[in-house]
Length: 431
Image (cartoon, rainbow, N blue to C red):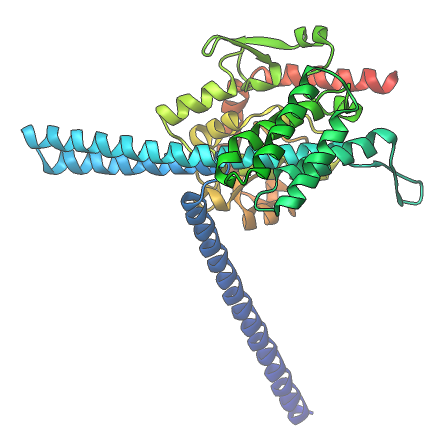
């Protein structure tokens, strides 16, 4: 019996050690794979940022570009102050100012080109949206599409606009497109259509005289602009009235309009970024953007991404969360920088690309006093916890509660705003 027990224990010990070795091997392989994945993600992120700085297209790209310019300026200023004195220092600062002016001018030229390209893309998206058929979902989940006379009209105008906007097409095809456009606008008699017809006849005449393409660019742009104005007129394209930002009825413009004291323009309320703790409406978005480009040159892309991920995660809870949609990226920036110190509450990781905000208590709605800043892996582990009091030490919980009190004092207006939104929803559901 003793011999049998000896051999059995030996066999059992060998199996346990082999299982431990296998688990260790799998764990090391998983860690190596995760390390490789994170390294590739970081390299891809750096490559995308480099590409965005080389070929800026969006507002966020130019924010990064201005932020990089400000960092370069600060580094040069520190170097000059550290190494030079007297007249040499003044001359170096003059040279730095001239370099900065040249770089700003270069960024401005890129911005003009990007704005022109983005404007054309936005116009095509707008016209494509007008030309979409009506869609609705049936009880069995199938999507049904239906074209109306208005969507067919919008699609016809969209195809004509896309054709006349094309460059480098043969002369006979261009002539056919112009004649189609002429027949289309001749259906309505007004000053706008007369002007379009006159410009079309002028281009056809110039093409018959073998005028160079480069000399016709201005005329073709005028035709495109006037035809776009024709398309955006509800009288000629009824479907566009559903999508236009400016309502056809001028009386509707008087609602929800505010005055920007910086640019002195009357703008819709949606053009004003209002922080959660604000008591008055300040400057419009455009003035805030211009001020940032001229002074601080901060890049808000990381904070916007954190806010976007937070809103997506809150929407997945499907518990009618309101507060997260009241918070703007300026509010989130204040929380991250002043309350959480730009680092994870657990590991002190300070890379904003790796940080996310999640609920402290996942049973309650997210708010500045029910949140924690963690890395993505830490957030996944945190949300799997069932009892926070057992998982974390008392000192850590006390530190988090202190941050929550600071946030609640700073965002004191949010509870009243959230309760108002909940009451409005309840009234709407009751009605």
